[in-house]
Length: 150
Image 1 (tube, rainbow, N blue to C red):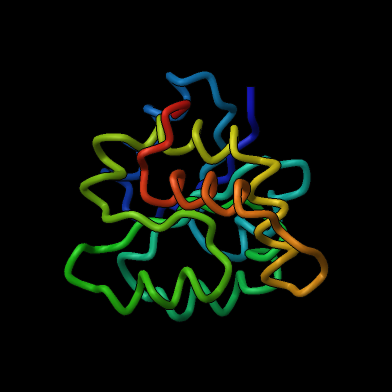
Image 2: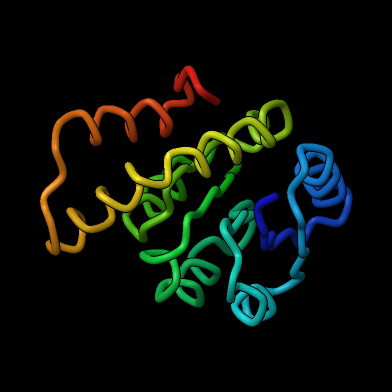
């Protein structure tokens, strides 16, 4: 069972995400603010982040932990700039809200299973290590959502 901190300010959609993650066997703590999410991240395996409103503010507050915490973020499908900014900030997987609603638990499971690939990719982004082609391809499959193990 993975520990998940979820910043989900939208109560209706947040309860849906919390329920699907809990049904998949994850221990979910919902944080209403980015600051509350920061307080509960110690020992968590995954951060789920709602970027549908004030994405720049949330990314700025959480910037220091995005490079070291596996992060699944979702955004409004019409706001492609938010997706680009989230990936640049260090989020591991950024999907439209509609996909999160359909596949949230599977996406979280796939991201948690891709731990080794994610660590290699983070090190490569930070310039602290080298990532081989197989690891980059594996992480790319998880980001696109076509990882067979998810």
